[in-house]
Structure formats: structure tokens, C-alpha cells
Image 1: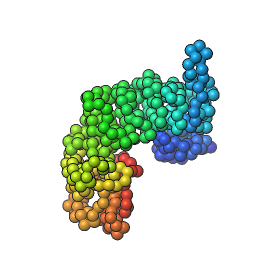
Image 2: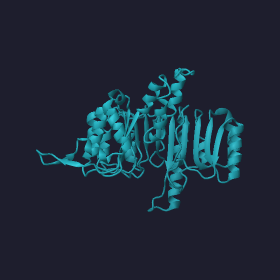
Image 3: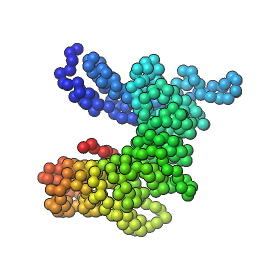
Image 4: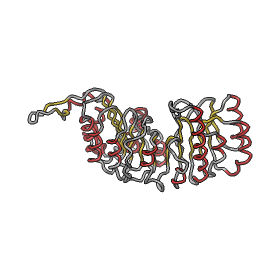
Length: 398
């Protein structure tokens, strides 16, 4: 087949758009596999994306073997234990073991345990160890599932102490072992803790200072102490932050001089305190927090909304819009906008903003259309919905 008529650099950019990050690799892997067959020019580009990320899913119990010398049970190191893996995991694993040059393309690893393999977590640790030994360029790891993870933590720190990107997905308990593990990763740059049920963490004693300097943090922990620890060494490096508004103190934003992407969520509702008291306290704190937005001189993307079901707003859209930094390009609002206020706001600020896009919610369908027209008249692309939260909002690049 003849070479592509488009410049190879443009082909590379187009193929890169097909890549779906972990844990959604299956959505585009077949398409990338087909792209490998298009031509010799396509092959190295598509193959690099096809093997960038590897998912290993444990869907059944892994068999154990008894060591003849010690009499202790241990995971079967033979091919038998792969019976507990998904068929795709088995196929990918065999390919990587047979073709080291393909294993060398893997930079992202995802381990999901959907059924408890054994009581001490040694089988998932064995799988992780095998994967990391086979794919020595892995710098990003995602772990998901309900099992004892301490052995997995030990395996990762042993084989990949220079890990750059770590994602701990929901359905696990963030405990002292998890924090101790994170604190052993000095080169960590991106940390995502997707369990939003983490409550106030650990004993009252001071927590250790992390050795890393994060550039991106996503953590919806309810613990102010844990949030403070995770951000204690990132004041000049953090460019992307997603967190609960409740744990971010008013002076938080002033600390992050390089912040470009900010996602604030609120859940609300302590059953021991009345709704009126909580609303008053939360809004007072929220106003102080968003008042610091003016100081975020490099902020490009701002998302503010609810984590889960809507309950009570920690601030108003008036508070937010009046403190938008001039640098902001993308705005996602999960709080209702008032058409009259929007018109007045745009009349005063449209010439001083870099804003290109906004997504918003409104109380009525007619309000959505009116607000959308007001923004688009000023050259700002707008998308409005009647009832919307920010659960699926993503950062947009400049």
C-alpha cells in the first residue's frame, strides 16, 4: 500500500486521538490494531499506542500450590494461575512475554482484582511483579479492587521506586499502609485517589512530609490533614488540582503559584449539624475561597460543582464570576446561572477576559437558551443544561 498523503507528523497526531487511557483501553484497542495493518508507515505509530497501556484483570480466584520443601501455600508460578485472569489479560500477557520489543512499548499498567484471589494479596502482587519485570518502562500504575494491597505496594516500591503516576481507584480503603506506600515514591508527579469516602485520617500525631513534588493531584478526601500533607511540598509545582471545597482552606489557592486547572466539588451534609448551620458556614468559607481566584494568574480551567447528589451550594455564581482571573479560558459551572446577572456581568467584563468556553446549568429551559445567546454574542462558546452536575467534566488544554 502506498505511503499516506498526509504528513507523518499529522498522521501521528490523528492516531493519538484514538488512544483511550486506562481503564478504558478496550474501547479503541481493536481500532488501533486495524490501523497497524493500514501500511508500513502506520504500523510503528499505531503499535506504539496499542501497547502503551496494559490492563490485567483478575476475574476469578487464583489457585495456590503447596511448596514441597516448606509446606507453605504460594501462588502457582506456572501457567495454571492465569485461569483466574480475563481472556484478554491472558492474550496480552503471552504476547508481551513472547515479544520483548512490544513489552518495551508499555508505559502504563492497570491491575484490577474483581474477586479476592487470596487472603494476603500475594497473588495480585505476583501478577504485578511479573508485569513490571516484563515491562521495565512502566511509569504509570492504576490499581483497583478489594484485596490486601500491602504486598502489591511492596512489589511496586521494590521494582518501580521511580514511579511517576499513581491512580488508586475506588473500592479500596485508604489506610496507613497506602499512605506509607505513597511516601516511598520520591519521583511521584501525578496522584489520583478516587475513593471519595476517605474520612479524617489516622491518629492526631503529625503526618510525615512527602518526598515528592506533585504537578497534578486528584483527591476528594474529607480529611483536611491528609489533604494538607499531600499538598505540603507542591506549592511551586502543582498545576492541576481536584479536591473537595470543604478541605481547601481560603488561603489554599494563594500557595499554588503555578496552578492552571482547578476542580472544586462539594458534597455537604453532616447529620449531626443542622442544614441551616452547615449552609451558613459552608457559604462563608466558600466565599473566602473563591475570592482568591483573582490571585491565580495562570489559571486556564475552572470547574465548580457537586460531588454526587446536589445538596447545598458552598457559594453562588455571583461570587465566582466576580472573581474570575483574566487568564481563564474554560469555565464549568454546576451551579445555576441567573440570565439577568449574566447579561450585566458580560457588559462589564467581556473585554477583560480570555474566556473561550463555558458549560453551565440554569433553573429553566428558556434561561438556558437566553444565557447561551448572551455568551455567544461575545464570542464565547456556551453549552447549557437544565439540571447538571460536574461529575464528568474534564480538563481542557489551551
